[in-house]
Image (cartoon, rainbow, N blue to C red; front, side):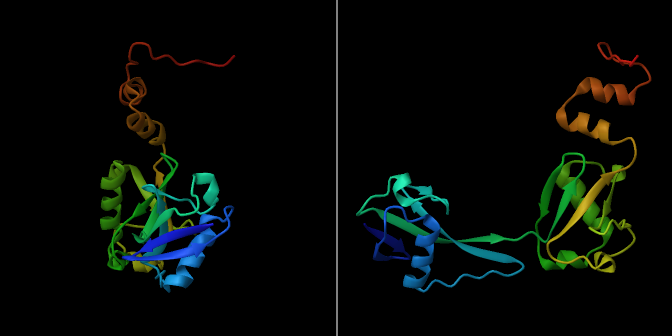
Length: 195
């Protein structure tokens, strides 16, 4: 079947089988339009194909998404900033990107800790950061002292006893939070003992 690919004001007819995947079509587009994509430590560019206003996933077959002979497919170059580093938060179990420029790698640990605190909503005094090699980062040092590079995944660990309280706060469990903050147990808060 013949489809028409539109890219930067140009339209090119391409003959493709109906079972062709979007990924294979992207390869054809790259070679026909001589598309150059940059992929470095800070910026990643990739092709996105769109049909009927929806982005097409690489694994989809053209006929499975209703693309027939004579269809017009839009092609765009998308750019995404790679995070300078990421932080695995042991409280939430999520990995969050730390956006910025490479100059962030030349800052102090205390500034990074403050930035992470603001981003994740956890007070600075309740956690510490560790490198992938399990080395603790100290506020008085610089990130380059720990040889942290672009793309490093740091680990946010809480001090002993803080995990349950912070999880209760983040999940909005008032009784759990009150139970950790008060000697008196709130109404409806009970401790079950095993036999």
